[in-house]
Length: 86
Image 1: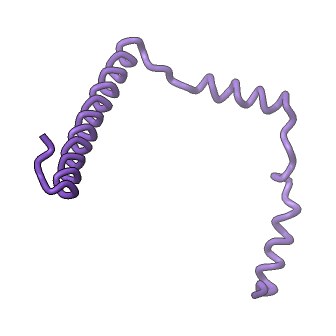
Image 2: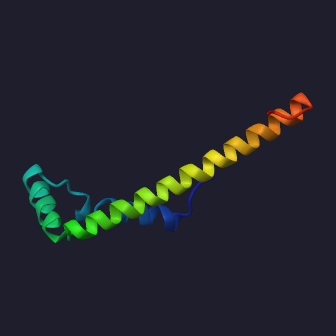
């Protein structure tokens, strides 16, 4: 299926924009450094708080997945062997 004449014309006019020009390595490096200066890094206290929150969440998720795995494993074993697993 071909595009309409208007759609083709729109694509042709977009191809000549000056935004397509590549950035040189020096300009790229300067822009990266400028963006990194804008970054607000967490304090040591915030970092420790984030660490403990993430570790607690991960440990809770590990416990939930482990219990589900154990329970479903016992259920499947009981179904396919016709008796109790333990």
